[in-house]
Image (cartoon, rainbow, N blue to C red):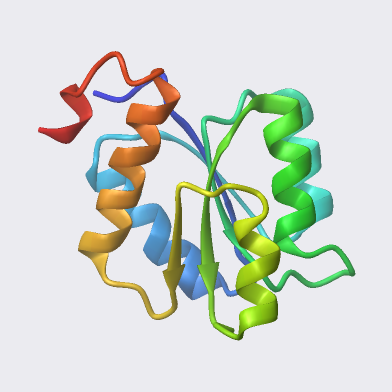
Length: 134
């Protein structure tokens, strides 16, 4: 159904990553890459065009989600959806500067994730089609 959409999930918690993967697959998206840190995410982005990236803001290994988002949008023009635990002003300011499609607070609601993904697909298609909203 959505064979042209490629989603990158960058989440260090394997249970959250699995939950995200299952929800995305239910939308008919089959090209999903799941990694636990920014280093792995960069390797995937070097080999694959990324349509949408779901990023945990607090990544392990020194690089945060906002810095990774800048790299991904420059490299692949990925649409960014952040997953945050920390909703303090400093954290929100950092991610808002990268112009994300959405910011979802953990634990997120399935419907919010689905809506954010649909919106990202519309932006990814240049707003030319609303077939993703069905």
